[in-house]
Each structure stands twice: as C-alpha cells, then as structure tokens.
Image (tube, rainbow, N blue to C red; front, top):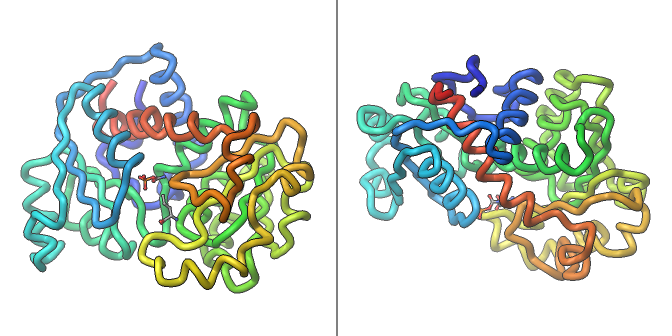
Length: 308
Ligand code: CP
Ligand code: NVA
C-alpha cells in the first residue's frame, strides 16, 4: 500500500519525511520493484526542469506511465515562465491542469514558491540545496545490498553539495552513519548537518572530516558525486587538484569493508571523482542505483497522489 500520510503533501527536502514514512516508502518501492504491488493512477505529472537531466527526467516519466498516467514536459525554454512570467502565476495555473509537479531548479526558495502557490504535490527534482529523490533510490539500493539500513556506515567523498545534504538527512532518518570527507572549504551546510544530527535514529552518527582515508575505513558503502555541480561549470578546472585526494579509486577502496559497494548518482566524470576501474568494478552498484530512481519515484508519486 502507498504511504497514506504522504497523500497531498510536497517533497521539497528529504527531512519532509519522518523516519517511519521513509522506511514505509522504501518498502513500498521494493514491493513495486518486485511486482508484489501494482497500483494504478490516471494522473498527469508536469516536469519543469531548469537544468539538464537524463535519469530524473526519464525515471519520472517512465514511472508515471507505468502507473497509468501521463507526463507533460514543461521546458522553461518554451513556456512563459522562462520568459519571466512570475513563478507565483505559473504555479497557480499549472495547479489547475496537473495532478503533480516535479521541479528541477537552482534556488530552493523558487521551489518553495512553486509549492506555496500550487496546491498539488510538488516534488524537488534537484535544487542547489537538495536532491531528495536521488537519495530515496540510494537508500533502496543499500537496503537491497545489505538487507537493512540501520547500523550500516557510508562514506561520502567530494563536494559538500546538494546530494550530500539529502544523503546525510536520509542516512540520519534510516539509522545509517555517514562520514563526509571534503576539502576544508567545501564542507556541507552546517545547518543541514545539525538538522541531521537532531533527527538521527538508532544512534546514527554524522562525521564531517577532511581526511578521506579515515572516512572510508571499514565502511559498507562509498559514494561520490561531481566536484562541480550544474551552475558551477566555471569552477570545475580549478577544483580538480583540490579534490584529487577525495577520488574513489582502488587505493581508497582498499580501506573500506571488503564487501563495500560503490555508489555514484551519475553523471560521472571518470578520472575525476571516480576512476573508470572503480565505477566499472565488481563493487559498483551504480546501474542498480540508477534503475532504483524509477521504483522509488513511482512509490513517491503513488503515495503523494494517494493511490493504492
Ligand atoms: N542523478 C541525476 O539526478 O541524474 P540526472 O541529472 O541525469 O537527472
Ligand atoms: N550535484 C550534481 C548532481 C547531479 C545529479 C549537480 O547538482 O549537478
């Protein structure tokens, strides 16, 4: 069954979910993936993406089709919001046509404006601050690999960005300890780290360090993301030498648990944050992780839409 308490709500940040809701959502996603559950809903999803996307765009589209619904691509380049129509106006109009809206944008405040003016469920499909849908898939992948989440430890290496913000909150709510290794000037937002510590269950710890080797010692999963996110392309070149010690490669991997898995939200820059060997190696689970975007978002949409 879908997660009843989520009906009609938004998902703007990972911590919009309680620990119990997250657990139930991941179980629902697993049941959808295995085929135990086959909910249907003839609803219309809008995708409003101000940034590029392959996985999120296609996994949301496929998920709503498989639920029996339809998708409309509201590319800002060809809709009036891209020409300056206020978000508040666009949101109120879209609310009259659509059943659910996924937005990928820069500022979290813009996403919040969409959610404020649209009464339908609004989903964060990535902002500069968070990427909660990604983390639903990541947690589903870790759960599949190890049979449980609570008590596991994950290391995130690289930039203190949107992905690690949602990851640390998702880990906290799932009882997963996380060690975040970044260069000193690229740590995650302190307020989000503190929020993670406040909501952590089952003794899950959040450690922020600049020591990549200490971070990966004995962990069950290693995770990385690009060193320069969308919108930071100008900074990519100068960051390479700063982030080099945080690259996931066979040397760093040798410090982790021998059964550790390697995760990356993709797209990857091979030879930068991860080596070709590590992403193609037997410990890599990146393709399962990418597939799980669809199952997790199907569970999310079915729950927000109140479908059984
Ligand atoms: N991981 C992720 O969100 O990929 P896309 O940017 O391709 O959607
Ligand atoms: N941190 C990356 C994630 C891409 C899926 C970005 O925001 O570009």
